[in-house]
Image (cartoon, one colour):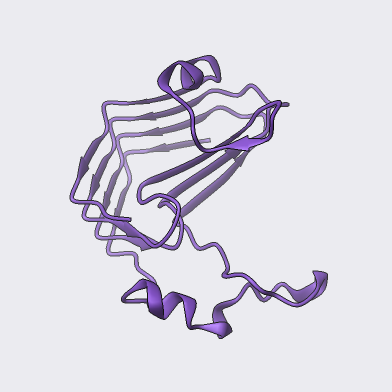
Length: 139
């Protein structure tokens, strides 16, 4: 999967603040085939559940966008060793309500999912996040 040289600008959802998000029962995840919904639907600009393909997100521009979770949400199981490269992107004046504002990365380890790891762990796990520019993002 390659996302290269794209511009994402002004992509927003309808909430002005956190309180509005949590007071909207109509926006609970409506996939009720598994029972009654009780959590907000995860809304993100780009969601990739990494299986066998390499992921390259390179040379993109993200500006004035918002999401419930990070703009880019990547999830990978330890059963897969595909490489993830997030390189030379610009993130300007974006926001997210929970979790992260630009990139939310979940890696499954022998202990379980983690979103807390250091640079050494990322390199060993086949993840490179480098040379990106972040300006006035909040979340």
